[in-house]
Length: 193
Picture 1 (cartoon, rainbow, N blue to C red):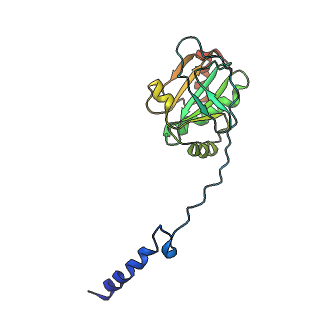
Picture 2: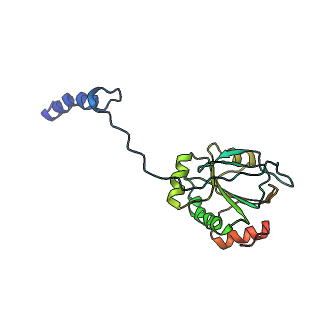
Picture 3: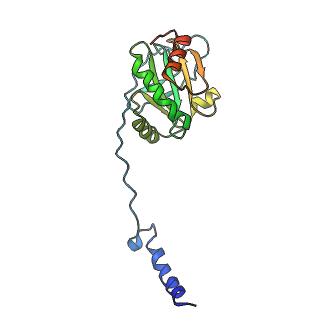
């Protein structure tokens, strides 16, 4: 056996002992610090207590919002509402979400625009929302309950809900511009921005 190989064999147990996670050998590395990312989304506003009525309805589910409050689907929304389902791992969502935020910025009191992080954890939603400049109210559906209940696969999806909570339109493909999204809102909800 060469001198190099003997040295490596002799030192290997010492090196490995320093890599243990049992606290022995002093080699336990501390986890890297979490990035200092501030939640930029605003709280979800309180919704009417009345159940949704009309035609097709969303599953009656309630989700916690990143900025506080809750998003209750299956209820009358009180105003026409856009609900955009997205996730940090979804490439098309990364392109569409800034357009949805533009709509939220332009909506005023005539239209409610909310996001729903779907099939993703809250921390990922916060990091992505902060990075993308998203401030609209955004709830979290980590398990993808809404998508499962509604029979949806993949992301993104955008629901346009009437004030009574009924579904006016489901957008199955990403929108690519504010003009396109405003057109869908005008056509299906009768709200011109």
